[in-house]
Image (cartoon, rainbow, N blue to C red; front, side, top):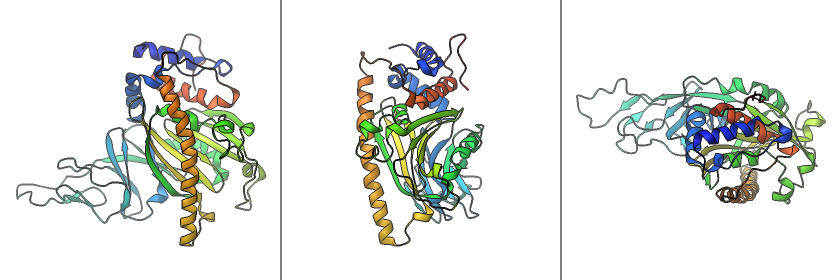
Length: 380
């Protein structure tokens, strides 16, 4: 196995190829622990991580929890309607405070019952004695940002807002009214593959006719897949549907009804859109051979049933449908992970429906500092 410097040079050479000559990354990009550690340092510890949807926490005291690298995070709706992200660990002896999602009037540590208000200020610390001063004790706050209804958190104090980075993508998907969708299903899993393999699988639909021949191919056939150039912070490809979507609002044009976009907001948020549904994943590496997968399904408010029984039936149908699609993808990407460990694994060529992968690799090479050969076309 090459050392990290030589691997970065290989990645730089690969990413510098013009698309017409593009190949997959060297296998070490998926199997080398030192490279994964570099990704964590340069990407996940300093960039924006999607933690869910803002509609999941509509009322003061509603919260979501997640983990970014090794930091436990809670995201809480405040009394004034704003959203605040806090480190989800007690300032006493670091017990995690909240788990999953839900609603609280105050944040109470399950270990020694230290309690905090929704802003993270310590209010009670039982039996600590008269010499303990709780003033100034508070949970560290992390930066948040919102884009098209998605909620992001970063551990870094200086990275530019992701909503700014994705402004050009908003223009591409504005007809889908993404911010009017609400999350109706949420999953949290660990898959046995490299995080990039799953991101790449999500953002190319070349495989639909074979891997999803009974689930997706009948509605969004591979024949109708086409890519357009992305931007520095994202890529996109489109699927022409064999069944135009319902006209949910009056000014909806036929071209929008007949297409679905699939996108990758770098580094690790992938999502697809239709007029009435969306599917998203937020990925983080757990070493080179495992990925933590937070995923969800959204539905446009206009088609969300008001009847409780009908809503429950819709959620059940969504869970069944997307669990089946996920299992088809999981089978493939986990097989890729096993094969990439072989000394016989080699780089392969890309086809015209895989431009998004090439753009992702150029972003990785640029962000991770992989040196490009002299005379190479720079990644934008």
